[in-house]
Length: 400
Image (tube, rainbow, N blue to C red; front, side, top):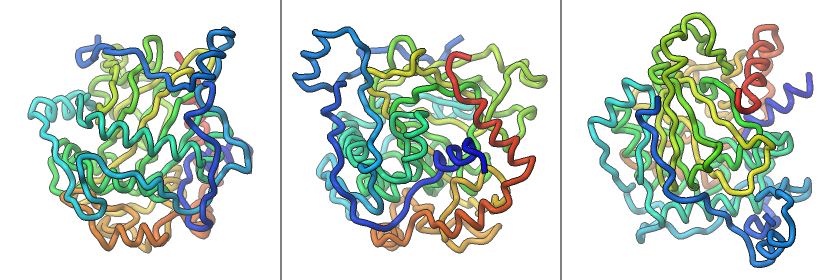
């Protein structure tokens, strides 16, 4: 098994149940044609202590706002920041909030393959997400180790809701599910898979998303929730307008060469989004996109994002054993190919969370399982799978 495969595998895995987490270091004390495009309203936030500010004056050395955790700082098991919900909501009692979007925004998503919805979450919700993220980076989880150690991101963890209770509560009680059900014209929304992403150091070249969980692209909706303003010179997601309708790219591929035959009508029609805190980007899983990180890979500000894929009502479970897509489906949920996607491993968040599913999550019954890591990945050591891994690694790098 190659090193690149191990890194790739670790980057995509997430969540476990086990030991009580221990305190880690303090995240906040580090020294730290564009028809839909929006303008930057404010400079990106820099969080620093007075001591850090003094050092900035004394030295012009460029320093990362987040440092890589030490090996002994990683935690296992369930974690709970004990954050109160905004707006007086009661965890596991209050119904989720709502947010009305327009018919024009829904049409934009259908036609362009992506839509920018501004101001879905107010300052209270943004502050909540930032605090949940700060806790997580202060107390890094084992399932973030490979992605963080490989320096793909300053911090990255899949299925964060399974291990960090604050993110589960966000899904259960925020307006996220209501926004996505309108976009998908559906009466039910379930979380298929998610990612907490802090500062993409290398950037990601043109690609489509294939780690959407055990669902098809047509059954899923991709989402991005931003906690910070976009920097002036990099970090703005760029999408090829309408590229979700292309038939040239293999659904299992990650990397996309936009100069390939069949992409002529999309490659020059680009949409750039300069998102602000509380905004959502929503797109079709096949929409081709990229993001450029800083040229030197050093973020002196935060780019914190909660993203992932949700499943529409009526979605079926698709067993993806033997393919790269299996890496976002490594829990022992017991579903078989063709079953209705109804499981606490893929929790319902619209029209309302399910208390029994939430209880299973809180008890540690929901999580990645090493037995499934062995059995589900067993069929991947093939030439075809090797091509898929190479496709993933071709995505890494910036400004290409």
